[in-house]
Length: 178
Image 1 (tube, helix red, strand yellow):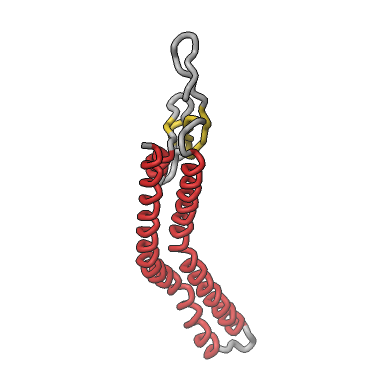
Image 2 (tube, one colour):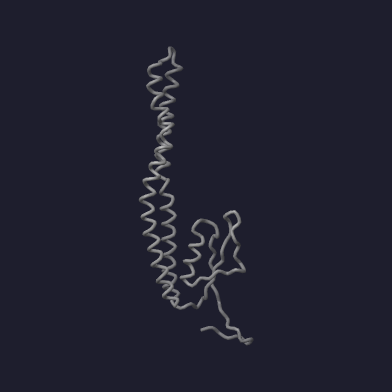
C-alpha cells in the first residue's frame, strides 16, 4: 500500500485539484468532492474574500477504485454544470422577450416622433403610434417578471431532480471509498 520511510512515517503521494471557493454552491461542491476521495488541503487553500478565493483539494494517488471514482466525479461535475445552466435559464428567455418588446416600443415611439415633427404635424398618427410605443416601454418589466416566475417553477423542479441525481452519484462514490 504505502511505503514506510526510515523515520517510520508512511509516504503518501497526492494528486491535487483546485476549486473556486466563492459562489453559492461552493460548500456543496466541497462536501460532494469528499465522496470521491478528495480532502481539503488547509495549507494551500485561500478562503473567500469578496467571493474570490480557492480551495485546494488532494487525494491519495494510489486510492482504490480511482478509475470509477474519477468517472463518478466527472458525472458529478457535468451535473453541476447543468445546474448552472438551469439557473441561468430562469432569466434568459425573459430578458430576450423584455428587450424585444422594449425595442418594438422604441420603434413605435420613433414613428410617433417623426409623425409629430412632420410638416404639417400628423397628430392622429402620432397618438396612434405613441400608445403602443409607451406600452412597449412599460410592459417589459411585467413581462420579465411573469416569464421568470413561470420558468422558475419549471426549473426548480428540474434542479431538484438534478440534486437527487448528484446525491446518488455521491452515495456511489462514498460506497467505493468504504
